[in-house]
Image 1 (cartoon, rainbow, N blue to C red):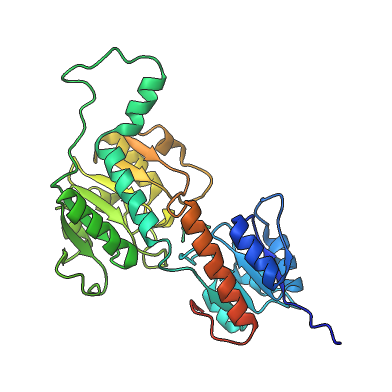
Image 2 (cartoon, rainbow, N blue to C red):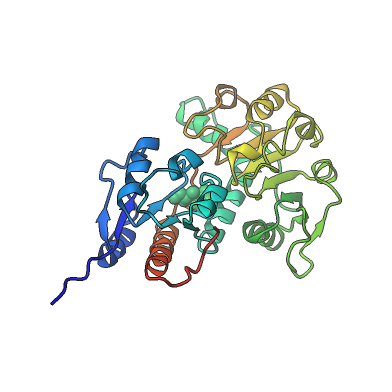
Length: 323
Ligand code: 8YV
C-alpha cells in the first residue's frame, strides 16, 4: 500500500497544547520548543522546507523573507487577526495564501480595552504599585482620586468588530455615550454610536479615546503630536490595536507635559522594546500585548489557524483568507 505523505507544517513558536495536538493529527510538524521567535534566516529556512507555516505577530514576514528560492511554502496561517507583519502584496505576487483568525478574539480584546479604561481612569496601576511599596498610610478622603468612567464620552477610532464590541460594553455596561471615526460608515450597530465628522472632532470631544483600527500605511502615526494635543486635558488614550498607530515619542512627551491625563497601552511601536519616556510617564498603564491572551481564545485562534492550513493544503478555499 502506498504511503501518502502528510503536508509539512512549521510552527514558528509554541502554540497552545490543543493547537499543537490538532496540528500533529493533520501534518508532519516542526515545532519550536525554545519558543524564541525566528530571525529572517530562520523564517526563510522554514519557507524553503515546509508546505505551510503557522505564524504570529512576532514573525516579520517581509518581501525579502518571502522571496526565498526555492520556496516550498504555499500558505501562511497567521494566529492573530492583524497581519501588518506580513507583506501581503509580496505574498500575492509569489502565490502564497495568507489567512488570519478574526471573530474569536473580539470579546477578549474588547474586554481588555475596558480593563485599561478602568485602570487608567481610576489610576489603578499606580495604586497597586504604591500599596506594594509599603507606603500606604490608610484611607484619606482626598487620597488617590481618579476619574469616573461611568457616563463619560467614548471616542472609538476604527469601527470594525472589536470597535463595536467595545462600544457595546461601554454603552450597556457603563452608560457611556459613544462616537466613532472610521473612513467608512460602520456596519449597522443599531444606533449605538454616532459617526464623528473627523478624527480631530472626535479627539476634541471624547473623555476616553480607544484605538481599534488596523496598522496600515494610512494609519501609521494617525495620532501624532498635533492630534494628541487636540484631546481634552483630562482625556485618556487606550491602545489595544497596534503600536504604529500612535507616535509613541509624542505620546510620552504629552503625558509628561500633562497635555492629556493618562494612557493605557497594550501594544508598542517596537515590541518588545518600550520607549523609555513611556515607562516613566505619569498615569500610564502598560501591558505586554495581552489582548487575546486567554486560554479559551488562544485555543480558538490556534484551531482556526490550523483549519485554515488544512483547507489551503488540501486545495479547498481557506475560511479566513486575507491574501
Ligand atoms: C496577537 C493580536 O497577535 O490578533 C492580533 O492581531 O494582536 C493578538 O491577538 C496574537 O495573540 C499573537 O498570537
